[in-house]
Length: 439
Image (cartoon, rainbow, N blue to C red; front, side, top):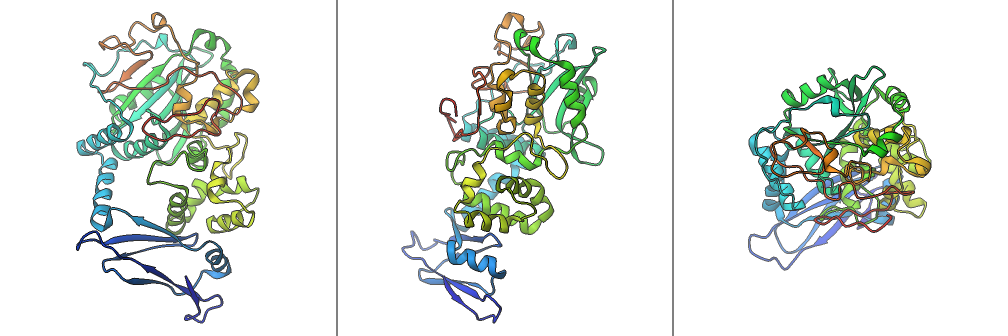
C-alpha cells in the first residue's frame, strides 16, 4: 500500500499495488474483492503484470489508522470471473420458490452434508390425535423451498443441524393445545414470537406454507415431562409473545471458535466483509443483526460496525475472537430480550425446570437446533410413542415425523445430557461435524 494525498483531503488516500503472474492458461482471469471496515470494492485482472487499485480518500482518521495498522483484506475468487458467476448461479436457485429451487436445496444438502433424503411411502401427512401431544413436546421443522428453504439450507450447512426451524407444544389450564414459535410471520410481514392454537398452526403448515416443510414431533421422555412446570412455561411465553424474532443473536449460536465453525471458503474475515457490505447497503438492518450484539460483547454502546472493528483492534483482540464470546440469555437489546426459534424453545425449557440445578450455567442462546435435538430429553422407548407415530412408514424413526415427502434425519438425536457451559466452544465443520467432549 502506497499512501498519498492526491485528493488533498485531511488524511489522503492510497494506491494498492498488486502483481499477478504465471497464468494457468491464456483465458485465466482473477477476480478479487478488497475490503476495509468502511468499504468493499472489487476488480479483475487478465494480464500478468503489476496492477493498481486507487483509494482516492480515506473515510476519516479511523479508516486511515486501520489500513496503516492492518492493511486491506483481499479475497481471491478462486474460480475466476466465469467460475464465480457459475457459483452464484448454483446458490441463486436455493432461494427460488420452484421445483428447481427445491431440487437445488436437496442436492446442496446431499453434496455438502451427506444428507440422504430417502422418500417416504405415502401418505406424507400423519393423521394425528392431538390427545397424544403434551406440553414441552418439541417440533423440529425443515424447509426446503423458497426464501426460507434457501436460508435454512445455508444455516444447516454451517451449523450441522438437519432441521432449520423449531417450535414447542404447550397446553393451557383448560387443556387446549398451543404452539409457541419464534419466527411466525404476522399480517404486517414481520417475524415475531407467537402463541398459536394447534389447529391454526397445523392448518398453515398443511395448506399455506409454500416452503414444503418437513415436520417431526419429538415427545418428551415421561421423566422429563414430569419436571415440566407448565405455569412457569406459560409465564415465560406470555412475557415474550409479540416480540421480534431474535435476529440480534442468530449467528452467535453458530460461531463458537476462531476457525472451527467456518466451512471453506468461509472465514471470520469474509464474515466481517459481508457485514461491511450490509452495513453500507442496509445500515438499520445490519444494526439489528449484529451491531448491538457486538457492542454488548465489548461493553460499549452505539458503535457502528467500523467503530466496533477499530475498537476491537485497539484492545489487542481481533474480530474472530470477538465473534466467539458466548451470548448471555439475559442480555437486553433495544427491543428487549432476543431469542431465535431454538433459543425461545430452550429458554422455555429452562424456565420450566428441565435444566435443573445447572440452569444458571446454561446459555441457551449458544445452542443450535442440532444441539437441542441432541439433548437427552426425549422419549427413548418406541413402545411409548403414539400409535399413529410413523404408522405408514416402513422405517420406524425414534421420533414422529408428521409431514414431509422425505424421511427426516436427526443425527445424534437424544444422546447428550446437559452440562454447565454447554455448546459455548464447539466446532462444527462439515461433513462430519465432530465435536469434542464437553465443548
